[in-house]
Length: 280
Ligand code: AMP
Ligand code: MN
Ligand code: MN
Ligand code: MN
Image 1 (spheres, helix red, strand yellow):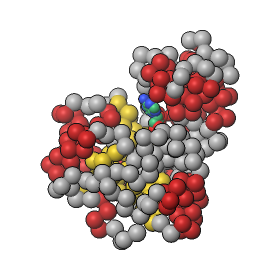
Image 2 (cartoon, helix red, strand yellow):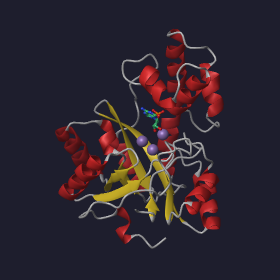
Image 3 (cartoon, protein in one colour):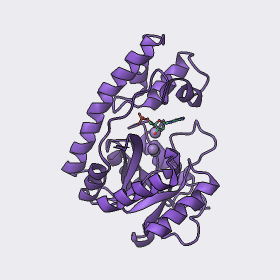
Image 4 (cartoon, protein in one colour):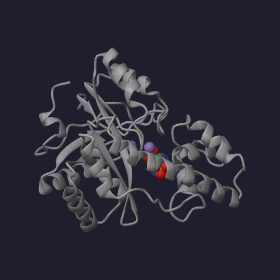
C-alpha cells in the first residue's frame, strides 16, 4: 500500500465535493505523506489547499488536470508542481473555462430539448460553487431532479456519446497543455490512460506525441484503473522511458470504494515521478 504520495484529486474548485482545505485535512487523517490537488482546468483551490496542508503537516503538490482534445478523443493531462502564478498556464486555463460556460449552456439546451426539466441549468450551476461547471454537476443535478438513480446511471443515460446531453469536446491541444504545464515549471502526466479505451497502437501514438511535446509521465496506478491496467501501463512507461505516477482521482467521500492515499505500490521496474523530489 502506497500512502506516501497521492497525485490526483479534486475539490469544490472543480467537481469534487470537499473544499480544498477539507481535502487536505482528510488526506492527513488518512496518513498521506504528500497530497496533490489537481482540479479540472483551474488553479483556484491551490492557495487554500497549500495553507491547509501546511497546517496539517503533510506535503503539498500544486497541480491541475487539463482537458485536451486529441484526435477527437478527450484526454486529460495532469500537471504536477505547477506555479499558480504562471501567466501562460493561467491564460490557457481561462480559455478552457470560457469554453465550459458555452458548453454548459449547450448541454442544458440539448437536455431540455430531449424533455429534461427546464431547471436543469440553474440546478447544475448552483451545485458548481461558481468556479466552473462540469458534466459531474449536471449528473448530480439530474439525480436531484429524479431523472436517474445515480451519477453513474446519469452518465450512461444522458452524458456519453449518442445520448441527448452529449457533445464532442473542443478542448485545447495536447501540445498546448504540455507546454503550459512545462512553462509553469511543472511535470506533465497522462491521466488515467486506460480510461480512454484507445487501441494499443493509438495509445502508443498518443504517448509518442506526448513525449515529443515535452511530457514526463503516465499514471500507472489510478483509482480508475484495474489491476491489469497497472501492469499494461507500467509496460508502456518502461518501453517509452516515461516516469510513473499514482493517484486516486478522488472526488469526495460519496464514493465509498476510494480513499485518499489508498493505492497499491507501483509495479516493479517503474521509475516513480517523485524519485528526484525533495522528501515531503
Ligand atoms: P467534464 O470535464 O465536464 O467533461 O466532466 C468530466 C468528469 O465527469 C470526470 O472528471 C469525472 O469526474 C466525471 N465522469 C466522467 N465519466 C463518468 C462516468 N461514467 N461516471 C461518473 N463520473 C464520470
Ligand atoms: Mn472529475
Ligand atoms: Mn480525468
Ligand atoms: Mn481527475
